[in-house]
Image (cartoon, rainbow, N blue to C red; front, side):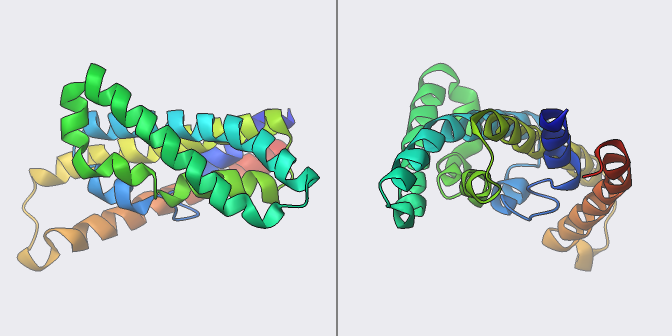
Length: 195
């Protein structure tokens, strides 16, 4: 039950994009079309999951040897290596998606959502399985936010928006409204799990 609570809380009430405001760059930059939003989200889920799997044992090793101060550096190096791997695979097997993601794919390396996830796993004292569920929740929460927001942005494209609201202003207002919708899940999750 605790694993389900961790995952649902991370998807809905502690959403990395909409609650913790981590990963805003790809959220705003790649959410114009559903295809690219889904592709970016899949890449982020993959990197989050692999980063958790690799960083957890490395963190245990660092703590065992008294090198906790190197956590951030090690986490960043692992994430950078994983993103390079994802980029190579996408370039070879998913060329159109690779081209549509453009500069935003390498930006997963500096996506604070991925670094925030592995750091949060350490801070919360999650064991390996809990860390995996937290990673899945964070990834699916990222994907949910991206898909919802891409749908909103696609619908806004066809609307007549006043000139002073066009571009970034209306995008930020729409993002704020999406964030408010996720606040409604807080009571539901708290009543279900007492979280």
